[in-house]
Length: 619
Image 1 (cartoon, rainbow, N blue to C red):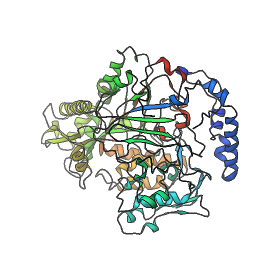
Image 2: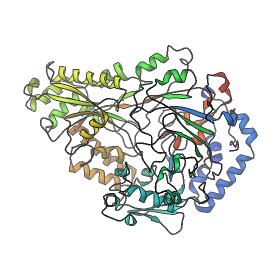
Image 3: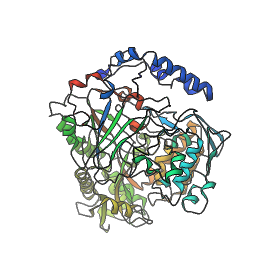
Image 4: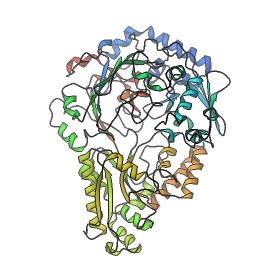
């Protein structure tokens, strides 16, 4: 891959980060205002012109950015394999068993910028042509490495493959009830040809037909990473991308090495024709089995570390870890970047169809008996903010202040609600177990501390210090199989959920009837249906405010806190991807490098001033 870098201006900023002109940066990347508005050939020609201009200014741009040479443009990340089985590198092959550096062999129809705004991806435009039909116009000229062009057929075959019961895709629930006939196809009750996806008036028009009017379809299409139709036909599945010899890519990278126990290394796709060209030449995912990541960062083995997300046990960069970092001379002066990633909610869910939790007053009592601020201050700060509703501040249509009165810390009100429900002072309340997974929600140590604090508070406030609420730790598989069973087998469950796409319809649907939990409310379901069909933002806000109020007031769960993620980067990791966004968050935002980050992150020439172990023979 050639070293082609668009010209930018104002090269000084935070920690060497160029303070880039928004106009010049977007234009050089082919995503300026005109590029967003133009469609068809006009848009393609405009983007081509901008790329030509960028090529003519390579030398100047390299001096402005202070880029490291191409052989040093590798980006090493930490990945914990504990509890993981890495089988594939493509979303539509498997979601939950994808290896690190997945989804970089293709381009989704849409992408997100660091302000969580949709920007064009493989689709240069999209429109709702009827209440139940959406059309996505694919930009011509994106080529697969096998010589085929990316067209609507690739998306059609990918979606059909996802719904094929023989494939048994592990994320099929995502499109169930959304795409026409998807649920029936997954169950084997309708042919794949009846699925609501197809080719429109030309090979570049991908048409999606929905079960009902859906206003948020473009947001949901963040997850539209296509497999190659030719690859699926030839190999029968998406596993062809775990072998460098058979990898078929239309994205910026191709596979160099796939070792799911040690590392996954990508290299430039020299046949790449899309406009989103990355600076990083070699994404290197280093895989460890439970190794604590901060020392690896300190010695330069990896270029960044972050808070441990769910599914890991390393626990890095939580409260105690950030305090430890302050004592480490090599890294204690580095800025801590903070952002919400998937706007995750941590909460305790009730079995609402079994006494005593059939009574909303009981559930409300538990909600009012949690001192969120004290919990966060003692165990979680600064990587948490109090949750008074299911949606985090900054998430679309979220409200918080109007909900506080239904769930704020108020011991007298909590005790009164429990007494009104027939359990004065906790008398005659049955012994109840709060179950939690061993490592899924937080690090295992921190999870234990949090649930112990919750139980101690509830027993003290509601039950006069009696051990009425007990604790049970379960392995992850057992916990989720019991929690998600119908009916649920857990009376109380400490759990978490993060968004799949950036719209209130996603997060709020967790409490839809027949969903993850057993709470059923027809009024709530009706509000969600109205919100999904409504395209007017003001009206959607009214609908979703009412839905959030209803959910919080009825308290099918105790909403505890919204998670934040802390990041450390060596100062040679640079680019607009790290800058503060409109919400005041910084660092690489969700969904990470797979969205519009490749052209907004690079390695600076100052890498020699800091520990860096090198690529270790991986490139």
